[in-house]
Image 1 (cartoon, rainbow, N blue to C red):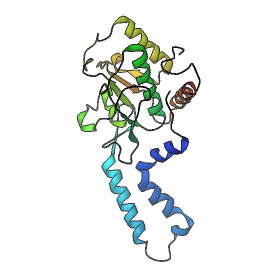
Image 2: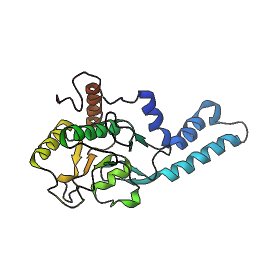
Image 3: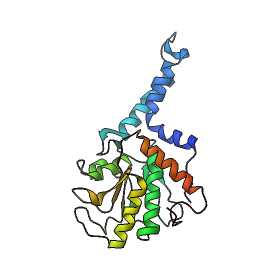
Image 4: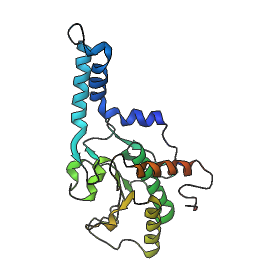
Length: 229
C-alpha cells in the first residue's frame, strides 16, 4: 500500500525550489518590508542571494518534451526527491514530488505485480539533463516525470522486448491512466523501458488520476497488486 504524502509535505517539497521567489517576493512584498525605512537588512540580502544561487544550480530553464522544467539536481531543495516504492524490493526512485510521483510510483508497482517482478536497481527516475537527448521522450526523466523500468532489458530504439501477455498488461496500465501516462514503446523512437507523464503542468487529468490512486491505496482490496483495477 503506497503511503501518500500529506498535503503539508507535498507543499513543503514542491515549493523548495522557489525559495528565492518566496524570500524575494513574499518577504519584500509584505507590508513590513515593502517600504523599509533604512537599508535592506544584511540577513535578508544574504538569504535571497543563497536562494538565487540554489535555484541557479537546480533549475535548468528548459522544459522536457512534456512541458515540465528539467532540473540539474535531485534531493537539492528542488522539486525532485528520492521516494520509496512501498512493498517493492527497490531502492528509492528520484521523482517530481506530488501528483507525478503518485502516478509514476503506481505505474512501477503495477508493472511489478502485473508484468514482471522487479529487483533492486531495475527502476531509474531522474537523470541529469546532460545525459539525455532533449528531443526525445527520455528528456522527461530530467524533469522527474518519467521512469525507465529495466532499461538494460529493453534498449532504447528497439521494439519487441515483451511477450504478448506482458503487452496486454501494459495496455491495461495505460488504459487505467486515461492517457495521463504514455509508454515509450508507442513513440516514433521506441523506448520500451520508459513510462512518463503525458500532460503538462497543471493539467486537471493528472490531478484526478493522482486523487483516484490515493483513494485506491487506502481502500482494502484496491490499488496495485490487488487484481481489482
